[in-house]
Image (cartoon, rainbow, N blue to C red; front, top):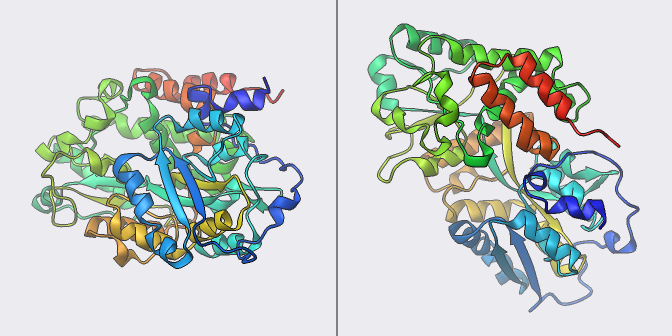
Length: 435
């Protein structure tokens, strides 16, 4: 079997493949079609979309096409599967791809770049106007854009209790210096600073990778970050070790982590922030998606039981932001498919979905933040809109054996006493060779 095909649907490796920015195959005539081609009527045409979202999330995506369907006459049919990463390879290899696929990692697009079409210039222009170039560069090959950022996860967030802050006289920090000073003040006040949990079954360790990625951006900047995930510097490079040591030292402060650092690997990710509600910790650094883990009845927002603030950036990059998300790609060049991709690249889609789908965040920087249904979502959207530069989750851009393997296990090892340098050297030795 073609090894490229095999790599598409082989367990964890398929989840976080390497992002190697090599030139795409020469574009065929099918890739030269414009999305504005009106030579054939679009009325009654059907476009199928397949992705990882199911139930309410998939319904939110489906409903977001209502104004598009009304205007164009195109029928959009959305379906989803939790095992998308496996199923998309099966479908493409079997000659039955969807018209549009929603990939949960940009690196995954690399594996299918010969199958998906180059997006027309008008779609690429919309993408250039609406998205941070750090997001579109990840899916651009030989100068051709292959995918549209369609959904965002905002990771550079810290959850807290507004009431606990008010009672203690704390203020939300706006710089890294203020953030570290706040942590030290909490510890001196005998208040545990952080709740941390790395437990996630086979994926145990991943939450710490987000901490390291956030601080790689803040301490070393986006250029070093890019060299790191592309393996242009080794995983045990002094800059990388310094960042890992920074996070380790932050957690190692006496009274910094609820239950102690040695317990975080056995603390389930989904439960890790809950002690914040009881005042057992003051801060929980986790993405916007953690909002679904608060118990029913927990109010969220500036006046709620919990709220979240942006993890302050650096002096050089005050709005630098770590994200994750979903990318849309087209497997066909029919006019109705390209018209649908153009819609996904625009603000009508993002504004529509923001209004109707709770928990959705758009990477489109021109989305109207007033479209979001509640104050906390509007605040998250504003953070994302102001974010610059944006960088995608590095572990999702590394080879699966590293980003979804040895990087995770190294994080666990560090919390149980392994030296950061030794742990990262083990990751470096695990990096797949180019041959």
